[in-house]
Length: 284
Length: 354
Image 1 (tube, helix red, strand yellow):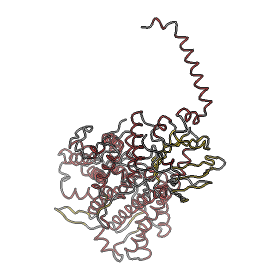
Image 2 (cartoon, helix red, strand yellow):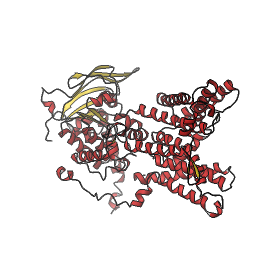
Image 3 (spheres, rainbow over the protein chains, first blue to last red):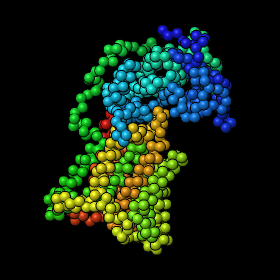
Image 4 (cartoon, each protein chain N blue to C red):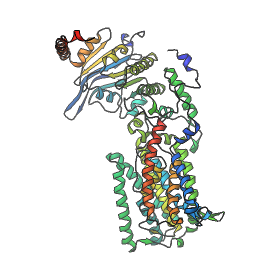
């Protein structure tokens, strides 16, 4: 890890901050008193098991939900987003796991969907494919992503490539904060590694990255700081120097339960060994 | 990672196999419809089928092109809507309703034909917008929403017309002010090589060109593919998804209005039942043209040839002396075949790994 987390520098304004936000759905408390900061050039991992409130928090960050309580600040200024478009305009881009790309459309059409470059005038203004293809290719190669051709359908890309293209798109369109919703969840080991590398690239380019996952093995190597959610509340934020991978796992899943599980599994293993011991010598 | 080395344009990627020009052509969504159109023309032109019926004459060409044109104008708009992920079953009734609004204003109120046409257009656009708003606000499938508009519009057209005139037909539009100009624009015949070609054919071709440009070259076209391919994904990147869908619904209603005007002016009158079943024929033309029912994929050129096929079959059966009852059997079988072929083509086009 070369980058020193900007968080270590006290006088830098967080690029994004939530203070004591809560969100209620009727009588359900989805999120209670959660605070979090994200600085430029760091990867903030938002960790938690299913139902911890990760999705609710990122929906607040990306402008889908309004917090029921608490403050939301971008660059130190309070904001009130009413739609994902507002958040996008403020430089907060969210890449959703399944909803990042449209499979039947080409890579460059996807890349510029909603922000098409134009040429011509009046009623003859049209999609500038030349520019779109060139920028798409440039942006992807800047991130070190190789695709075969910009006019192939996104459906022909692998899951990791799709996430990577979506990240490159967000970076190109001036995102200051990149919110990645479980980008590695459906991916194989190698593919997840590819996506993690692009996250590192985005950080190197000075973006603040919020990386949502429940996989500590993906989060720990890339993360600079970790915010742990459990049942709608925050366990707090820890920098990498303060916690070990095992401690993070333990906090995420509730440590005692995991210890118990490990103990049980060991018992099973011992029983198995005992049962198979007499026949073992006959095996070649 | 040697990013600088990779930034240089690499002309060929070893991971993509060379695709022959023929195969690239074959996986275009419209190729099936073009091949089908040629096959059907050849079939009706075969000596044992055609005999001396004159299928190859300009006269016959003009006749099937006119049928195709009136269907094709609808198919263009429905194609765009289906690529945008929605259905519109109400267009058949809209033909009856907008034609009758125009005809009643002319015959009962003695309006000039042009303002009457404008009122009918405004009505059509309003119903299209309501269809779109209902679909988006309720989240109900457009199939259901427009099925109900189909019945409401048809019933209301019959009800009001009978109440006002006591009949179900309104005629004598040719006595209205402004009819001559309208006739030249919407119902003229142009003689080419012995065939009298309806001006609607030129509307059809012109609108196909405009819609193709719109779909493939404009931002709106990109948004249309986007909302049909994935509504949420398109919304997440800032596409005005509601506006796109409502405009597409207004487009289908406007196309029904145009066909209604062409028919009413051609026949100098209209009937409350005009346009019955047109919604289904149109969907067949669009699907035969390679557009996916699920949205996000298709071409207007394909819909053009789909409409040509339906028109040729419609007239070819008459020319060949078959019983016209078989038209529907043929249409149904063709739809089924087209859906199967399209599925295959789409899998090839996107290289889907299933």
